[in-house]
Every structure is written in structure tokens, then in C-alpha cells.
Length: 211
Image (cartoon, rainbow, N blue to C red; front, side):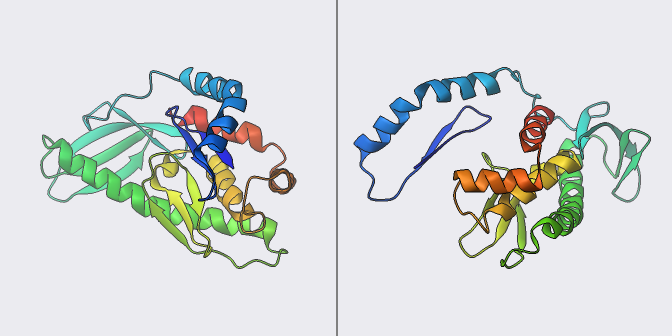
């Protein structure tokens, strides 16, 4: 049975299908103090970044750095990173929805590039194990940075492109370790620590950088 507390203070329990409700409640009761500590830990980061309005001067993250949005009028839609700015050229700078779509498309393109490079880097640490290199899919997930299917498909949260490269590598390595240890057993964390000795600090940095 696995209990996880998400950054939004949600509590998720994973258990075999034949597990009784009583067993789940008993486990939750035993872990109550830990659950409260985790919820308090994430709570210290509130209030979170407000909803984006996609107007000039607003800040947006890319690979752990903040860039200010600069909207420019132009005949063609484009995005460039220049001197601390997301310079977004659109045919209609008064249309925030157009700016949002352009930025999301740009993020997705960069996610494909950066996540692929991250997998190349992280795979080298585990290539000696008898496992098959996974394919990667990218989508937006509400409560997870990454996951690994039973068939070996790695799914990464598109919003991870906003985090530092070190944090992206941590998530990718975490999921790669699940090719060898499927659950979060002590053996899993021994393996994770062997490839990322200070993984706890990197995980903490990820949580701090994305609020």
C-alpha cells in the first residue's frame, strides 16, 4: 500500500484491488502525523503563483529562470527569448488567448527537446541494468511530475519544462529507477540515491521552484 501527499495537499492511496476499506483506513490512521506534516510542508508555499493573464510585464518560468513577457505587434506570430524577456510577436497583442496558445506551443516544443536530452543524460547512469530504454510521452498532469506504465512508457508533465534542468533530470531518473524497482521500496531509494546522491535536495528545489 502506498500513500502520497501532493503539492496541492491531496492525499492519494494506492492499494491492491482486494484491499478492504478497513485496512486502508487503518493505514491512514497510522500515517496521520506524517500526512499532516507533509500537508503543512506544502502549505508553507502558499499563496501560489496567481493565474496567468498573458499580458506584458508578467513573469513566466523556463528551465528554472523567470522571464518577463513582452508583447510586440507583428505580421507573423513568433516567440524569442532575449535578455530576460519572452518576446512574443502576435498579429493581435490585445488577444491574451492567442498569446497563451503561442506560449503553450512553444513550451511543448521545448519540452520535447529538453526532455529528450534529459533522458539521454540520465539513461547513461542506468544503461548497465538489464532494462529497455522507455519511450516518452508528454502531457499535462494535475498531481504528478512523471509516471511509468507497466509497459515501460514514461509520461512527463509538460509543466516540468518550467523547472531547472537538474530537477527535470531528477524526475526522469526517478522514473527510470522504476524500470528496476517498480514500487517505492527501500531498494528503490537505495538505487535512486546511488545515481543521485542528493536527490532529496533536488526534489525540494523542484517543489520550491514551481510554486
